[in-house]
Image 1: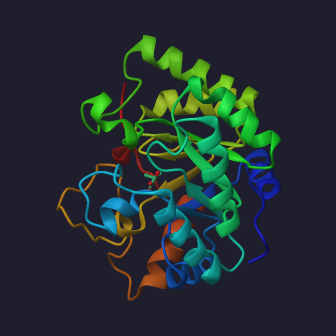
Image 2: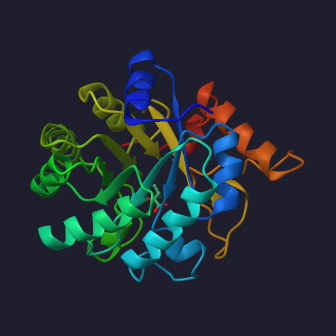
Image 3: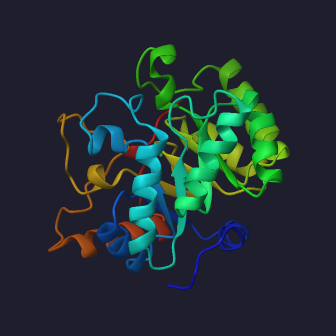
Length: 266
Ligand code: KIV
């Protein structure tokens, strides 16, 4: 696969071609996923749950993230590598700089932060220093204790209005990409239309510029037995993992995933 850059993702959005993203935590899956055509490998702090067995992402450290980012970099065959800044990694600007530097030096091409408009200054200063940032909005799992659970966000019109304004504010602050998790499909469509940067969705309906899933979920693996509504098992009917990953790429590209039943209403 040719090397995927931020410019590639911007041109995919401009052409209306869907962007494929998948979480990835090690070298072997990085090779298989990038060779299957996954354009963005996300070293998600979901590794705290699917690899480490925690019941939330909060225990994950920046050192954990840097370790797995370096593993993914060694196996990657041309995908863009996006790494999560974990819980409290951006509590101060100095921490945001140091933690982002560690992830970029481990092999990330972009970092992801969870939050809303209050992140604007952090995003602007990171972008000015050479760190592209993806803003993760909607359901932000690092704030599960504030949100009171893993719930759909933006269902009330006042919340939807705020999320639309926040997305534009973060783009204007310098965010290179936006990720929307668990928001009503209609709201995700409006945000995707309103911003110039690529918008990736998970549980955000079919209208976003691209899709992401947690690798273990889409392979039908679950530690807890709880499978979110927005997940499809791509292993079903496939002989092996490379075929399942290729099926995911094809389904995102041709728009057959996500189907209406994978989305949420307001
Ligand atoms: O950590 C993660 O895997 C994520 C995805 C759910 C988007 O942020």
